[in-house]
Length: 475
Image 1 (cartoon, rainbow, N blue to C red):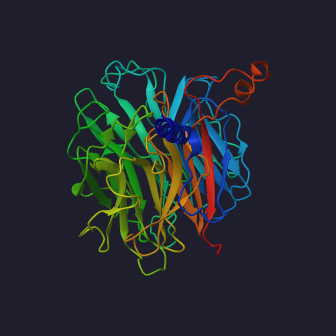
Image 2: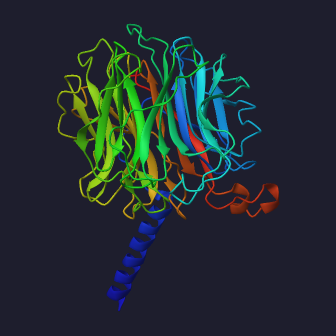
Image 3: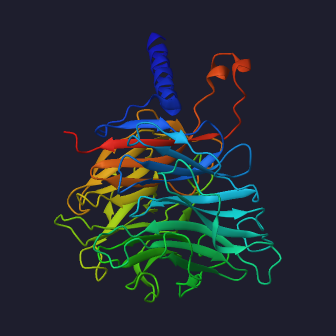
């Protein structure tokens, strides 16, 4: 009887240990990122999809943008830092009163130190996942800040817009991403570029526009995809436009096309592009079987090393898929300007096939040192694949191997199919790394302390935007 009781007590203890792990008790085995600091830049609400950028003319200026909020269905929110990411303040007046919803926000700095906010605006969506069916007025816009993100010009400059919603052959513009040419040797230094997907009733296509006058005017959008995707926001569509710029100003642009990553190039500052071609075969870009998250995509990123280091000119592409059963993060590189690509390297270094997911990666290259950085959500420490931390991968050998570092100390719990957005973002300047991501909001202190009157009730699926800083110049 005593032995049976001991076995029962042992099983209960083991169950409680596993249960505690499921609510945030795991310890990570990873070393902490040097100089790691993480802070919230938003209060709890339904925020997601952040983007972050560092001013190359004044690296103490950092801007993070993100969508969502409580006063409107979706807003373009901006937080700015003047002390290299130690503190952030919220910019005012970034949501225009004439649009109901803003989303898919991204940001960049140009070579003049001006910050740019790019977003889509609309009043309503069409059919679920079939945006062009019944879509109303919508468009893609850019706004400028001449003081590092503190204030923003009131005029929103349209790149492509359907201002009434009653135009003939109206489409839905989606997923805009903005980039700046800041390479000192480039013939197109100072150019700004935006790429996005357009949903048409019968297909999806990739469009592109450029500005050569500091974002004041933009070229007529041109289609740069040759093979059209399916018209629904799902596997088979085109999606996830991202680009990188070489030291000579060459644009390398990629997106998902079915189970392939395709790449195109422009050698004349975005006036024309060569025909896109498949460079990597990958798993389906959309995968919904990540517990506690409403949807997850493995959209790729691309970066070019323009540093003076030994890997100058190497091109990197990073993505995630479930070729190993669970979701992993992968990177491939080209040492010869897109003529050949390496076998994919697994960025996350936990045991393969362990059933733990790593997802929503973002990748960039330090143009001062040539180091490659990849940030991702990481569940390696949780046997039930729910507790999520942020991990930072770093490679100093041209993407051949990666060290993994813990960026966050405490995990958040994926629950109730929270919408974490469709992307995170990463920026780096001279060994200082900045990441922006979405987390489930922590429990309301008032609720946990039995003092509900002290604060407003916390709604389900609320999130916060967090910014992490790491400094690899430290020993």
